[in-house]
Amino acid sequence: MTAALVDHYLIHLESKLGNSQHYCGSTEDWLMRCKQHQASSFERFPDPQIVNGTRRMGVKHGLGATFLAAANSAGIRWAVVRLWRGPRELEQELKRRKKLSHFCPICNPEPQPELSAIIEF
Ligand SMILES: [Zn+2]
Image 1 (cartoon, rainbow, N blue to C red):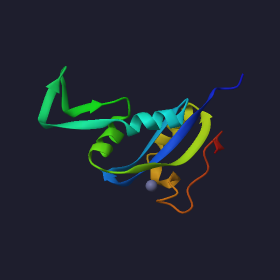
Image 2: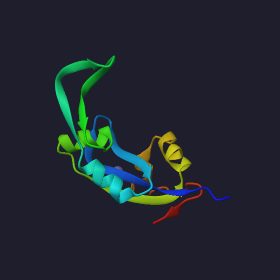
Image 3: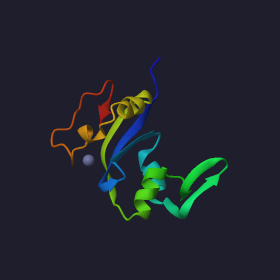
Image 4: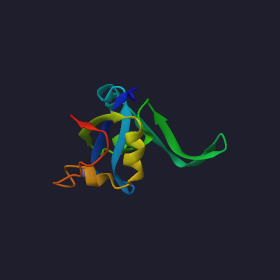
C-alpha cells in the first residue's frame, strides 16, 4: 500500500517575526491553504488576557496559521519558496530539524535537498 502524498510548503518572511523567519506546513492543497494564510490577521490585545484559562496576547482572525496571521498584521511580507510532495510525516521531519533556513533558497543558495521520500515540484 502506498502512503497518501500531500503538499509540503516552505514560506520565507522578508524579516523575522520574533525569532523566526520561516514557516512550513502540509496540506492537500497548498495554494488554497496559502490563500487562507494570506487572508488571516492577528489582533493584538493592549495587555495579555486570560481566555479559557490560557494567557493570550491577541486573537487570530481567519483560518490561517497564527504565526502568518501575526506576520500579516505586522506588515511582514512572505512568499512560498519551496514545495515538495511527500508523505504526511515529512512535515514532522522538517519541523524536527528546526533549521528551516537550510531548506530555503533565499537564505541558503544551496538548500538541502536530502529529505526522504519526496518529490520536488
Ligand atoms: Zn529563508
